[in-house]
Length: 281
Ligand SMILES: Nc1ncnc2c1ncn2[C@@H]1O[C@H](COP(=O)(O)OP(=O)(O)O)[C@@H](O)[C@H]1O
Ligand SMILES: [Mg+2]
Image (cartoon, rainbow, N blue to C red):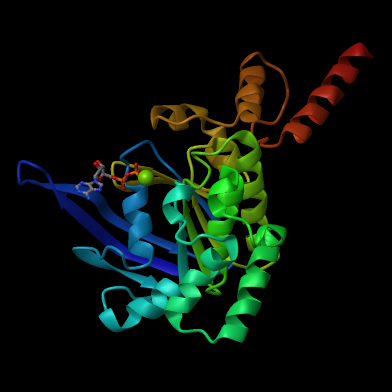
């Protein structure tokens, strides 16, 4: 779905020097996959995201979205349609005075006929669980609901892939849960390729693959269980591991026989329960 070949990108600093933000990044993201991207602030995650739909193009190397090189002007329209983006602040993504109009906005710009537009807007709102709110004013919604409306706006364009750049950073726990459930559904039921940039380790644990960036380079790329079991390396990279993984690793250090790759609370609770029962015997 997405491919970066030796991508190097620099910004000019205030002193006029070139600062390398992405440093020879090569990466391939398969269609239908769910990939999380982690990394401390300033590691280049958002810059990488902006390369996936041609908002930025590399100074060296090449990016392909759905097979189309992003440095060819003629591809940009189709790339932006097939690779959608959802950002951190839901308020910045709302453009209309009702939920329905907001979701329709992108389609109006594409010149989609009214009937088709109406159908797509309704489908998109249903798939994020916001159909009943279609006549409401977006500013009256909760953060999680606004973010789901923003997601519906992207889905209405029928994208093959959606890049989420810290979509839950400004939400309360309830909103975070709503948005994560929506993301899982888009991937699981609709087959949309997901790239989720996040600083919540529990969210990354829900993906199939975790990429960790540091200083513009990819430094880890593996299944979440594998990445998070490298507690020392993760900590050195300025990140945390999910609470469950942390607990298991502390127990292992105390000589307790439990797996270090656990990610889910339920799984961990069951393992602890078994251990405690064995001790009672
Ligand atoms: N428009 C810009 N002009 C100059 N420097 C920028 C710009 N956008 C980002 N940067 C710099 O690029 C680096 C990486 O930024 P970013 O990709 O936003 O990181 P992340 O999303 O991982 O926090 C940061 O040091 C940031 O200051
Ligand atoms: Mg960022």
